[in-house]
Image (cartoon, rainbow, N blue to C red; front, top):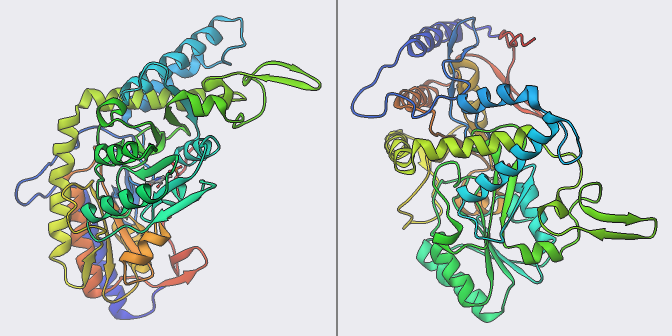
Length: 452
Ligand code: PLP
């Protein structure tokens, strides 16, 4: 624990400020003072170093978001009916089977699936893209800005280094596809580092003009913007429930059936087959082919419920809510000395409520640890599983990312900006050491929650 007088004084000041800012909403100027939707962590009080508790500010939604409260309630309601699917003769099993198939239809409808498209349930976006990678009959073109989940799975991969503007990047992709055909262009809908949104309909036009299909990694985009396969003329979309307020372990790949029907079963086992003999297997087509084994019923139903709730909240309302928070976040960060907001493109006019910064001095890992331990604010430090992109656009070895969503308010943004400003100016109030797992308080007196 801290030994010096000066740090003890600062600790007292930090605790006081933390408990003040944690108690009520203090809003200066215009902004969204209420969440658009209630999340399961609403009003969560957490301990900070030194013994106080504060309202948790969750600015790590791009990594994983708490459940919407309606999703959590839905899960509790369905649990009594939880049963095996497709095989049971009892009422709960038949009800569960029907609910899963209805969820398949509603998840497909949410992303504008066409007749004949498959909705394959997966664990997450990573698994969805790995599944698609087994089915691509040729080369895949990707940008270097991708999350590793959309960079690593492709067997025959060509990486185009993005340019300083979206316009030049589209031109570079077009030149690549014109020079040598590819089966697939797989792009992120929005960067998980900068939040910059890519023009997916325009990318689809370019891919199709050169005979390629397009897949969109919508892990970041889907929780914040409506995606429509038909409206944007996309062939595939992949996404994760846990980033869309349904953290129960499911995701999906939605898109054209032919490649998936021709691919080997992603998992070999029960449910994926029509018939098995000792020396022969007749595999099913359709989603079943790739979903062997007992499915994650709870995760699938939670995902469907979350997407239905996002629809109920309204696309325009979600966008407007997050646009206000994004503006305040970026304006506040740009006003802080020694902070640089990382950008990939100088002409990106649309971005999600995500900002990654680098610091002129000091360690973002230490600042992130102190935000959590002293201020009750969750962010993320690192390279965000997008190493090639991060290493190209950042001058530092790590960045600090804040990300918001439907459950966030202007008070969350202001708490973050205030705490970050103090940490940059004064440093942490407690002592930290660097461990293999990152920066940690030397003495951590925060009790773990008791969850029985
Ligand atoms: N793609 C993007 C853009 C992401 O941000 C992430 C996760 O952060 C992924 C893919 C992988 O998502 P998951 O971990 O749910 O598979």
